Length: 252
Image (tube, rainbow, N blue to C red; front, side):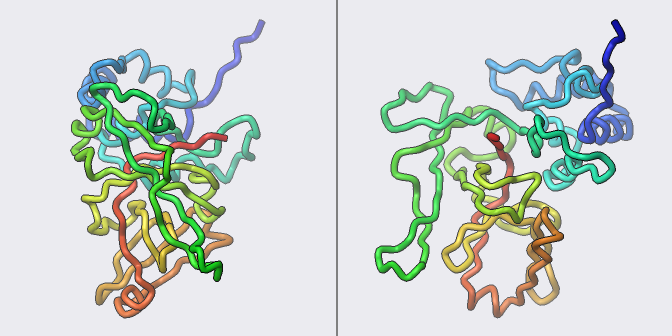
């Protein structure tokens, strides 16, 4: 029987290129990734080698690998979209950066876990179509406290936001959930941020413009062109940066 071989994923190709540029061995990279993980999580050179070689097409440690290699989240996310190859329907249209679990108030909290509020949009009682951003009444998400701190994220600063609409497809399809670090509100060009825009929750790639303006960019640029806002429009349309997206999860 002929052995089936698969090419490495675009993310794996990016990781390998960056790793070699930094002159890191696979073992050294795996050791640095392990430093970012909780005590109950493991990541070995063999695990990474399988992903880099294409034996495994996905890894739930992509965020940590990218962090060690100095790769931005937007660059990592863009590796998924390969215009030369048609999409395969059985695959997720996003890079999975971590496991996600939803709980309610009755689920016991482990000692190393922190509960994170999930924000959502709700229609105001006036019924005029206006929306308000509120915390979900029961659903919460949980992250490892030590894992967050090893990535330089204070647990108390984390919120989660649901993504709606198709503007951030294929990376963040409708219904995705993103983790947001509220302590990081200064714009780093090309990073992804959660925003409140006239009381609407939005998730966009941001760039700074002269005189205090911003440019919002979507992954689905064909249907959603760039939006530019002057400093005056930022104030008049109540655009507020909630924080930088450091994690996302897609269930399809």
